[in-house]
Image 1 (cartoon, rainbow, N blue to C red):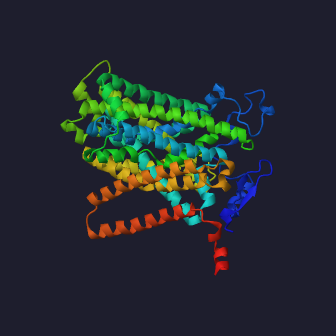
Image 2 (cartoon, rainbow, N blue to C red):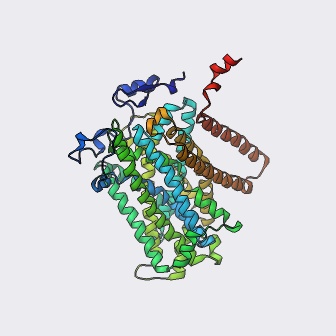
Image 3 (tube, helix red, strand yellow):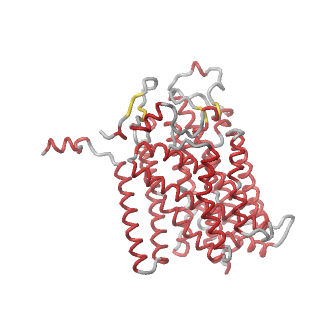
Length: 523
């Protein structure tokens, strides 16, 4: 039997626990393995009820608003990936080019994203490990290192978009005094803000993110009130599915950006910030229930904020000459030309919302980078050093991008397209391992997903991967020229597809009669 398939039974709870082979297992036995949160950092949950000791191990405790409040936080940090500058650009372009017609798709895309994020939370709660750690445990060295590289590339691509979004907002708010590259440097400092806040505890950090989300909600709701989109068209856009050949690219963009690879890793780690007794099945059920409620609430709020942005630009620019050229850089100026001033000019309202989106998403990107690097490589580094390494990986290329692309809005839009493609390429390498692990009894025990949920999850995964595949093919057909470049792309595509097939094959359960030993007996 291969080392990665070995398991041991925990005598206290009877569930199968991972048994690592080699040095990783020795580190775990010594208690030195990299952990998402130290025990002293976790929010204490057990002990709120006076009857805790008398509760059955398998029975879920009754609902408590106080406990829901204590569990609230990870889902809202996760939801920020649905509100980053890349998503906002997709929203405004969908509204400007497709009007209200893609609101139904935005709603269902958010629902699909919720399903995937709930599975990530389920994995983290049940196992007490996050996705990067489990990939290190379950895959051979070459595969986990490749998965780590893919996750880092996806994170860097997302971070460039987020930092550039913040830099654009800073440039607007400074009346152009601060160029794009200086905005990037200012945004880079959020790494130290993050480390400072983290020293004050998980709940304080979550409170800061709550303020940033509230700032986004207020800014974009203000814009919604200023522009007064049609309520009837809004409802019809949500309830009646419409799709035309002219809006297919925007539709692909709406669905393609719902699954951020780094966010799947992030959410599976964030849920471990609560102190949950994993030996008691009832406590695990309770945690999954509360996390489901708070994650759903968070993504409903993110849907409303995205709805505000889409409808504002649908009302303002649908059917106008500006619709085809609008992007993050010029969106605020177009709004200002159309609606002028007010108590607070709409240009600055847009910039404040964009800045909140960029700052919050770059900090969560730093957070995700720590978990990804620590989980895949089992690095036991001081938090400030690991955050600095993670931040530098993204900031250095971002500064180069800012200097090179600051002279042209069109070049920034082209860069954004390439970054979307870069992240689309990485989606299977987060989704497939996640779905394989949550379906595996040796990992999840009684909490493995059932056949109906498994079918729904794989349907979403195939749909998202297929749509991203369409985006990739369409992009490369229009952008790739020359025999040499085309040949290189074909080679990488073949290797890419082969690795995806390898990951899928590990999740296929063959019948017992198909095992190699039985095949030899049959012969």
